[in-house]
Length: 384
Image (cartoon, rainbow, N blue to C red; front, side):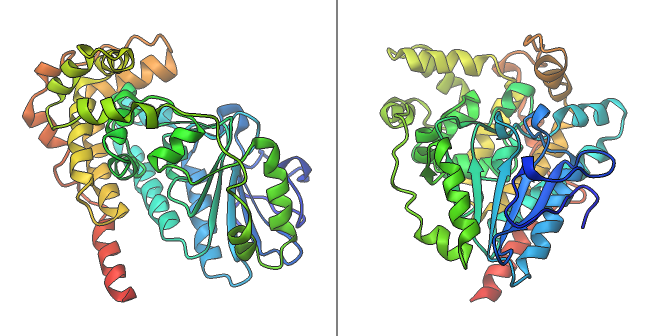
C-alpha cells in the first residue's frame, strides 16, 4: 500500500481512522463492509478542499489498478473529507511554480498522470460511485463526472473555471461540456460559471440527487450489502428531487446566442441581448483570458466529433502543453489563487488581438503525446 494511504476497519469513516505515523495521509484507502467488497477512497486535504496533488493522483491510479483486477472488490466509492467539498481542483499553484522555476516538465508529468487517471475512471470495470457533495471543480470533476454513479447534493457547487486563470477546460472537461445538451456546455465552459445539483444533472455532469443528510444511509446500505454493486443498482436514487436550477429554463437563449464558431460574434450577441442573464454572461466572458477563450471554443467544437473521452484528453494535453508557455496561465493563477486580487492582466487583453497562429499552437502535437485516443480505439476493437 502506498505511504499516502491508510487502512481501516471495515466500517470506519475518515473520523474513525486511527492516527498514522508521520504526515496525515492525503488519500485514505480502505475496504469496507463485512467482506470488504466496497472499496472506499476519501480525499483527505480538507483545508484545501481536497485539491489534488501529484502524489494523490498516483495513489488514486494505483488503487484503481489494483481494485480493477481484485474479485473481492465489487464497487468503489469516492468521497472527500470535511464539509466543504469533494475536490476543488488540481494544484495549479504547483503548476505555476514549475513554470516560474523553468521546469515545465513537472507540470506536464502531473497532467499526464491526471488525464490517464481520468481515462481509467471512465473505463473502470466495476461501479464507480462519486459523492459530489460541496465544491467539485476542475480536477474534482475529472475524478467524479467520468464515473458510473454520480451523486450530487443540495450543497454541490460544480464549475469548470479554467478560462479565468488563463487555462482551458481539461480532465475531460471538453468532452463533458461538448456533449451537454445544446450549447449548455459552451456557456459553462466560456463563463466558468458555477452550477448546482439540478444543473449538473441537466448538463450531464451528474446522474442522481440525494440530500446530504441521506448520504450516511447510502453508505450503510453499501457497507451492509453482500454485493455493493448489486446494492447500488437497486438503491432508490430517484426518491428525491433537487432544488430547481437555471439551465433548463435558460436553454432557449443559450442555444441561440452561443451558436457558431466566432467568439467575437457570440460575445456581441450576449452583451446586446434583451435577456439580463445573457448580458451578465457576456460580461463574465469578457473578463476571462482572451487566448484561453478562443482556444476553448475551438476545443469544444472539435470534441463534439470525437469518438471517446480519450481523444478529448489527448487534445487537452496538447493544449495544456501550449498553455505552459503563455503569459496568461502564470498571470491568471497569480491573480486568482496566489495574490487573489482578481485583477489579471491578460496578454493580449482583447479578443480581437488573439492571433490565429497562437491558437493553432494549442492544437499542435505534443512531444511526447499521450496517445490515449489510439489506445481507446484499440481497446474498443478488441472488446467486440
